[in-house]
Each structure stands twice: as C-alpha cells, then as structure tokens.
Image (tube, rainbow, N blue to C red; front, side, top):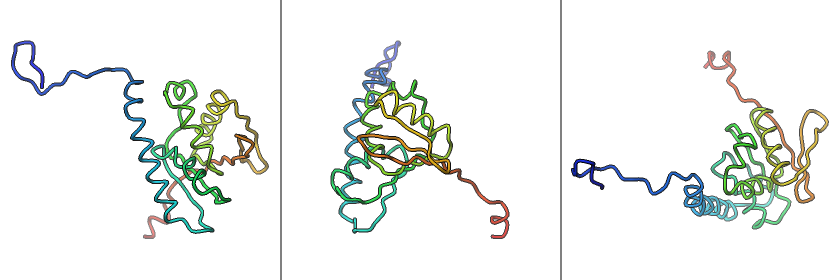
Length: 166
C-alpha cells in the first residue's frame, strides 16, 4: 500500500503504467497459454470424424494450435459472438496479426451480423493483404495462405411463441 498526501497509509496502489500496449504484452503469454491448453485438451479427446467448433474472442488462437496438431481434414469452425471491431480499432492491438492468423486457421468463421463480418474482412485485407469475395447464396469467403475460408452471418434470436408454449 502507499501513503496518501497527508502521510496516512492507503490501500491505493499507484499503477505501474497506463499504457495499453504494456498491458497487452503482459497478458499475451497467458492468453496464448490458455488457448494452447484448451487446444491440447481438444487434441487429447479428438476422434476421427469429429467437427470442432470454437466460440468467442477468448479463443482466437485455438484454430491455429489445432491445425498444427491435428494436420488432418478435420473441419474447424470459429464463431464470434461479440462485435468484431473496425480495422481502425483492431489495428491498435499489439498482437493483431497473430489473432487474425489464429482465426483464419478455421475452415468456417461465423458472425451474428454482416457488419461484424465486414469489419473482420477489412482487418484481414488491411493487415494481412487477404482477398475476399461473395459466394453464391449470400456467403462470403476469404483467401488466406491458399485456402478458401467460409464466412457466414447467422442471426440469433428467441421465437416468442415457442417460449410462451413452454
């Protein structure tokens, strides 16, 4: 604890730094370790024929760890339930390219809204020089390392009439 201006003991701790980059760099090894640990558990439990779905921004590196370990035609999906930030915001992250590369190791990437998918694709284009295109039926695909990755938008909601019946 620190001393206040009047010399009394205080529970307030002066922060080391207000730099977001320092915070990101301090947390990055832990983020990687959590993603790696989950991926290793999936590899341990994996059986041929399984489809792997990964959810949320907490696990953006898991697809890359799985691709390296499984090296098979196992389909890997990643669904981002939160809004994906604009490229102007995302590029402020110190590990932005690693995060994008991690997600792009999935075979299918889903978002709730087209705007979120559009932000993701803009980040891929601006930061990794990826190309993308519309597909028949309204889907999208992004090209990364010679692979075509499907991008879809799937709204989520509750059907009130079904809830009322319950």
